[in-house]
Amino acid sequence: MATNLVDLIKAYLTPDLMDKAASYVGESGPDTSKALAGIVPTTLAALSNLAATKTGAQQISQALAAGKYDGSMLGNIGSLFGNKMSTDNTITAGKGLLDSLSGNSLGSMTDLIARASGIRVGSASSLMALIAPLIMHVLGRQQAAAGAECPP
Image (tube, rainbow, N blue to C red; front, side):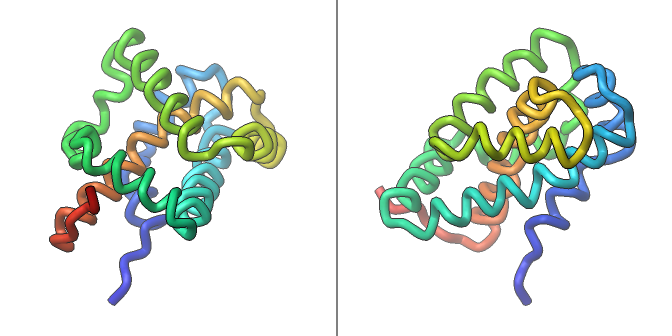
């Protein structure tokens, strides 16, 4: 049976986490929930498109092989909002990850999420950057569970 990654990732987006995310970016809870509901499949689609190319698949494999995305974040997902510095660091790392994996499409993805959910572009950008490491941790855990090895 195939794993539905969208549902698997969304399961980590608890109401408490969404409230904290809304508070952090200064948006309403419903608009933030709508944005997060769109960010997960949009980001997974971008990763899927990237993985469809040899170079892109290697990029994703190398990111997973680096060991940063081993699933360890998933046991303490609330740590995303432990303190402002921790959250800011996650956003910085997430933006770097999104830039390297999404390339030129990142701006249009961010605009689309902002328009569809009614939040500011800056808020959409921050939410995307917060969720990107979560998505990679879920992928890392799935890869480890499947026993797959990353190519060098």
